[in-house]
Image 1 (cartoon, one colour):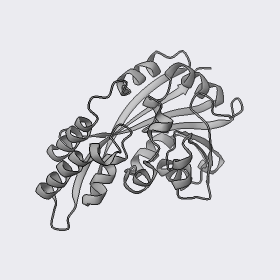
Image 2: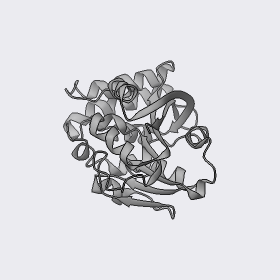
Image 3: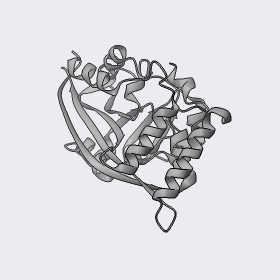
Length: 248
């Protein structure tokens, strides 16, 4: 599966309906760094720049690497964020040029061995790698059913990436050490249009109207059953954060 083309046609839904990240998650990633305004971060697989802007709001200079031109065009600008074309395996950065490499909801799409080599190459010895995933929390009954419907719509597409295998690749990598993991909770409130948009922003959900319609009908029914008086439903997340330091 080619993740670059896989997300073509999803930029608008991604920009409007993909969740943000809680301030606590950004705090964890930046903990121990002095003077954020002196940092340079490479946000890899940045999509429409949701996380890039959160880092930029901390006065960090962010270079957002995103291979899909539609995603880059759909991004909301930020004075501290510069978008560039590139990939995780070939970022275009000089050696030891960044203080922080982040991947928000993207690392599982990359080729692990060359990617981790590239991240090690571009990080300063004092730098840090941060991998972040917003996981739908199946302890919440509504979120569990939403998760089931979305993945059911993929028709078990072969080759869907495994987050677990990518975490194992990090743990076994000769390029990184002192891997540590934590998580924080997060909630996203959505109306019906937002719920459908969140589903359609997933790279494995069919885009053709004929294939998409059954999922839309199921989401309409789910929303009708669960919405509060304002017409909103709550998608519950567990934000998983993995931090690692480059081997010296």
